[in-house]
Length: 275
View (tube, rainbow, N blue to C red):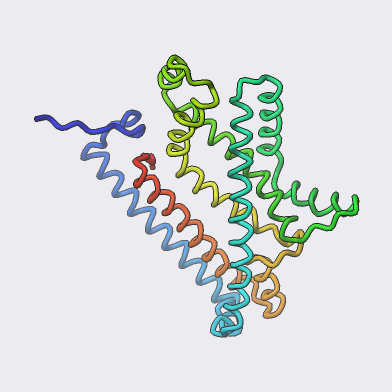
């Protein structure tokens, strides 16, 4: 009995590397590793020469108050990211449904809104929510002055992600549903959307990485997130390099965890991720 293997997009586009190619890959990997190690050694040496490895730049990390303050900022970052992600998820889904509704005025409006939020930088939207509502006599908390623009910027991307999932559903299933008497609304709700969401769940989770990175501009509205609290510590201890290095590692670990969660969900749902 012959076994069959599902081909991924990578398998279809590229041939399986032969012995010579694998040897070249190993040599290239070894050379790259040496170059990276030399670069790290050069950076550490420069830190030593400029005195950035002095105890006064690192000793405050041994204090519980430092990590408690950074932890409070991390909680602020998580709160903004999760709230903005939830809002973007709902708004992106609504924009996709409007664009694929078949009603031309509504579809055109949703397309314009989607393209606008995709094209405008989130920082510009943050400045808008920081400056314009106050001119109109509205006082928004710093949390919402950061969360709403980040959510709006992400919603445009998520709308396209949802639309890609809808387009990935075989057209024949839609035609079959319409042929047995289901209207477009029921077809979308019972047949298309469940499959589309399953296809794009990994992409939705991965988009949270972008949302987390967008929260780093919280200084505009003085919201106490991880980066803003790090700035306070930099001012207190005059330790710019060490603090930014530690904060960078924290953000890398957060985004790495999100990416691993995306891969885990993809494996559980049977969606293949080409890497």
